[in-house]
Image 1: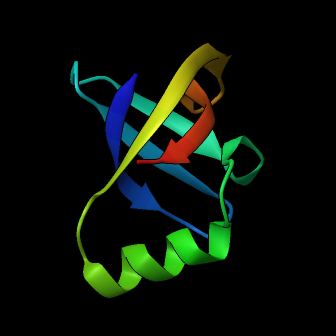
Image 2 (image 1 turned 60 degrees about the vertical axis):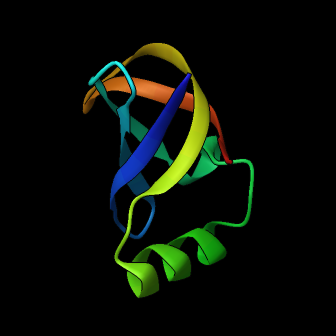
Length: 70
């Protein structure tokens, strides 16, 4: 599935998918360099495109796994 990182915190974030769903993801779900993602997200102020798989629900709602930048 494809989407964009809409919100990013120290160890987790939220992805808005192309189908308009919102998915929680943790730093452990991200396949690339987390610090690069945080820096790019903060500096650009733009939404970063990613691909991901949907897994079980978490306490924060639907969860994304295997998250990678496009």
